Length: 279
Image 1 (cartoon, rainbow, N blue to C red):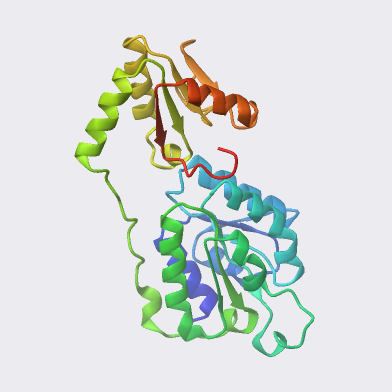
Image 2: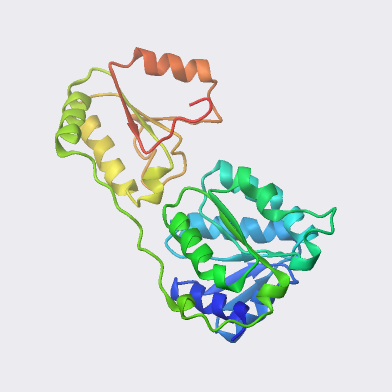
């Protein structure tokens, strides 16, 4: 069986129903043979944008593999992947790479090396025997939901044969974590007792499908006649319905204004935010 067919079947077992990309990539044909609908775009950047939007819409629960050609195709997709990296969007990039005997001929765009700064995981498969392990690691990194992952497969390897049974293995399920009960109880008590509590909530709330729980928490604080401010959640379901909920939008308020608001609060709670950059 072709390596491309092995990969398509592996992706299908992970719940993928489509692939999106720009030719040429053998995975497009392999996906169609496996019953996955190919979505062909006019540019590679648009393909990545579609995969990015899909990941956000389904909270990263199902992958939409994005495929491109080696060289110019991977170069054209770079900007969109960098944007997804900044937003921690879990997209799966599966470009081909130059054939093995061409990779040292240079000058050429080395995908893994170029993409490492804007992906959570990047690997090149130059041997079909290394493919199962590379994809297992990539899918495990993808399940964390913390940014793009990439596996570049050499063109001759993609078009080659593999009977390795390890391709049939399933990847590990996402690891779930839970805060210590005593810490959660302490934070909840201080939040409800504070005169001017502030909640700074990041994208992790969305990826955890916890928007409703966050709204309930805010509603509880409002019923106790407190002022609650939510950072970086504009546009989420259920938020902003009540005038008592202020939105400190990351792009809308200068950092010094947001810092002053937090300083004036008696207690600030950070929920699912890395506090990167100017946060």
